Image (cartoon, rainbow, N blue to C red; front, side):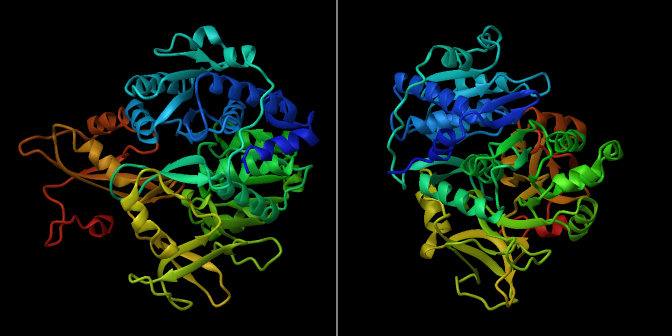
Length: 516
C-alpha cells in the first residue's frame, strides 16, 4: 500500500505546529493542513467519490491548493490540476477528457476572473456533478452559477477524523495535462510511486533541510512547483512561502523578509530578478547570505543569465531537465558532482537516458538525437490514449520529442525540440491548439503558429495568417478574438498576413521556413 499523501501525514505527525505554508501574514501549520485535508476527504466520500475517481482543481498558489490536493488523495481520488488561466471551453475539455466527477474552482479576483470561466466550463460537462467554489467568503462564492457548495462550508462542517484510503503504488495519483503537435492536450497519469520517488530524489538533489524556507512562485498546477517544491517540501518538513503571482520585486521582498534559502524557477524568473528596477531598494547582501541553493528548469537557461545571477547573489543555479511525463525530474546537476553550466546534468538515481536516432538506435557521445528515458519516473501513460502511448512508450522507453546530446562524461544537453512546442515564459504553448482555435475565425483561411525569439520570455507566439479571399482582417482584432478563447499565455502577440504559406509537395506547411 502507498499513498502520496504520506508526504504530509508523516511530517504532520512530527511537526504539527510548524508552519507548512506562509502567505502574507497568515501561516498554515502541518497539523492544520492535515486536518483540513481530512475534512475535504470526508466531504468527497460523502459525495460518492471512491478510489480512482477524478477530481479537478483550479487554484492559484494559495493554501487552498494543498488543502484540496491532499484531501483528494486521502479519499483515494485522482487529482487533476488545471491551469488557472484556462477559458471556459478549455475547462470543459479537461473536465470531460479526465472524466472528473467533482471540480474545485477558486472564485478568482479582478485580475484573475477564473471563477466565472470555471463555472461556465463546468456547466458544459454533465458528467461532472459537483462544483465546489473556493473562497474565503461563502456568500460571494455562492453567486457563481452551478455552485454546489463552498470550500469554506466544507471546512466548517465536515469531519476532521478520516482514515486515509489505502491505495497501491501503481494507482494513479495525479493526471497532469500536456500536449504534442497533434490533437488535443493529453493527460499524463502519474502513479503514487512515480511522484513519491521523484520527491525523494528531489529532496536529496536539493539537499532540503528542515530549517529551510523555500519561495514557491512556480504555479502549483505545474509539475515543477507541485512535485519538486510542494510535495518535496512537505516530505522534507520545511516551511514554504507562497507567492501567488511572480513579480520580481515581490519575490525579492519575500526573500528578504523570510530569509529564503531555496528558490526554484524558470529562466525568465532569473532574468526578471536580475533586471528588477526595484532591486537596489532591497538588502541584496542579506538575500545572498540566506540563499543556499537555486534550481532552474522548464527551458534552457542562458549562460549569461546564470553567470550574472551567481555573481549577484553568490548562489549556484543547478539546472535540470524533465517533463510532466517524467514526474517531472529526469536529469539534474547534483550538488555533490561536477556542475557543467549549459548542461542539464546526468540522469537522476534509478533513471536511464539515451540519445537515439530515428530508428531508436543509440547514438554515441557528441551526436544529436532524440532523448529517451526509462525508470521509476516515467508515467503510466496518457489517460485513454492507447495510440499515443504506443508511440511515446515504444520499446519500453519514453520518447521525449526533444533533441539532445550527451558528452563523454554522461552529461546531457538540450539542443532543440522535434515538436513544434513553444516555451513562453516557462509555459508550454502548443501551436496546433492555437491554430485550431484561429481557423474557426470567419476571416481566416489558413494559419500557422510558430515561436519567435523574445529577450525576457524566451519565445513569443506568432501567427502567420492567410485571410479569406477578398477579406482584410485587422491584426489587433484577431488578437482580441484569440484572447477571448485562449489562456493569456497562449494567444499570439504577433500576426503577419501572407497571401500563401510555404509548403512541401505533400502539403505540409514549412514552419522552419516561417521561423527563418
